[in-house]
Image (cartoon, rainbow, N blue to C red; front, side, top):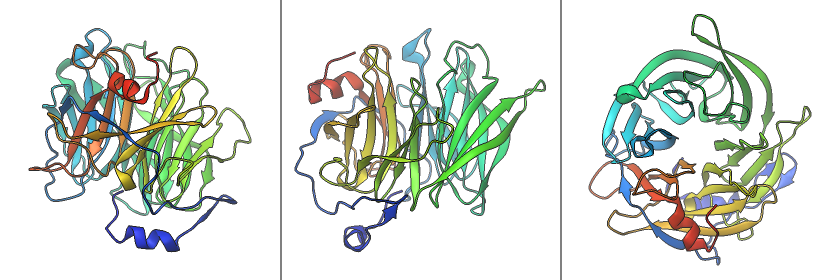
Length: 360
């Protein structure tokens, strides 16, 4: 969530204690440089003009024809967009106040799950089927996700895979509620094709959260507490509790707000976690297991304008055609000159080269 210009002053006075562990709020620029990369494409702007509206992207990779892959993005004032890699709008569903989005994608369809903020007292998940044929969205209904205002959403990909033909029979969702609650919700598809949800367990962080992502390798859940840092929950453990992963400040490479999170499962087993450092319009890249900060980057002006004040991000490995051969990184742009907010597209290989990291 983008905050007003008063935030740096407020940050000095707000040092929240989170889950029994203290982490500070960064209010000054970091010394660690952010290497510049440039976007190779951008989406059409969302329809809500002069508003903080575009928020979170998700990527469906078309394994049969990667250049025909799709991006799903939220306009949190209006609904859900589907874009091609050329940035053109392929579909739009005026589904209302959808904040964050994630998907579990198969060969010809994907289950799309978005956090629905239409009722600020009772959170919901809005479910859709994304069809490869025609890039169409089909509404599958809503599922309650417990008390509070819906904010973030991410799906557990461990054990789900991407080799199913239709929609997954079962998938675990993590609903990030604005008050800091995280709920694990098991979504199951019945014989009639309808999904139901069961809240399995929950955790509580001290202050506002939004971005989250899971590891397809370990099942670990990473959650961004906006003013504080990143927490990891090892969900494979029955007694899992949040543990500090990275703090806002110099050591963590993060300037509040901590916003979108994305995950790269690399072939060599050394995975990456990427976080949006909204306060200085940059991104921090971590070793996903050990937590070491491996570098920072930002998306600078080029043929396509640069990116500032990013909310949601997404990352998918593998080739995406000749323009994005090294993988696809998508970032929300909070200030798109000459138009409403949109999403910028970056070749992930360019990021790795800028940071001096090997392509995997």
